[in-house]
Image (cartoon, rainbow, N blue to C red; front, side):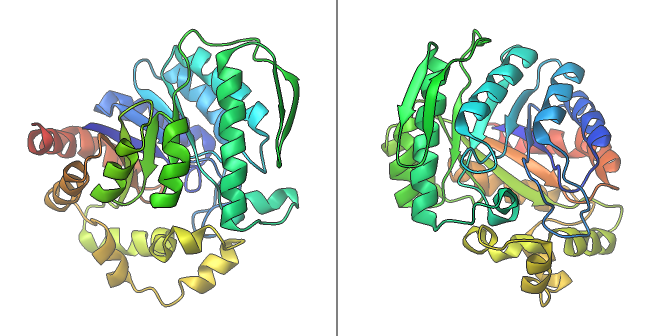
Length: 323
């Protein structure tokens, strides 16, 4: 299992994220995934820099670690032809280390362009068209496309990377698996569901990776970790069907006002012990995931987490997860 680190744009300023990227590679992480947001989930997080500018910077301060968006919505805030151009550029800058992670998006980020927020079936239709457009542009040459949601007029990627950008798509159930697995390389999911991985592989993707993401909060004491996780990450408990629909931080504040610190502590590992993290990560491997990117909650604890990960966590995980 590849072990990854999340560059969480919603909780850290841009210069800090670039520094964390370099340190995470030094610590031994093999994959770095970056969220692509216009808004944080909660006001307490307080940041949301432009992911693609930061990715460009990250390509220049890292050498070998794989990079990925987790995930970009290529349907409203961005046109898919522009997403293809951005992804191809990052692939060139990184020397072939980039994976384009795609998803149907959240109201939180896409409402800013004033086009409303369509129902989930329409969002899936839009994402399907977007994937086709991006894939065609990665093939090279001029692309023309007329769909129900997008039109492309003689687009071409003039700086096409030698190594094609792999496509990973976020899915949550059988319907989205059947739609996107045949068009993608890799699976993205945020729950360790073996059935989802099995369905994906049976549907015939071009690749075989299943890339998950798991939150945790390291701190010198469990109480401090729980307090940070509750302040900054209690939005996570709503589930993606809810999270995709809420329009702003005030909505997430209201939706999570009754979430208690102990509820957050029950949902994710909190504190300085490696045991709960290893146990949680093992469930992802048993579900068939090939990659797992950790989210360290809170900006203030990133340096301590990365030191702890290098010293204790990564060695313990590798020992536990090695076949």
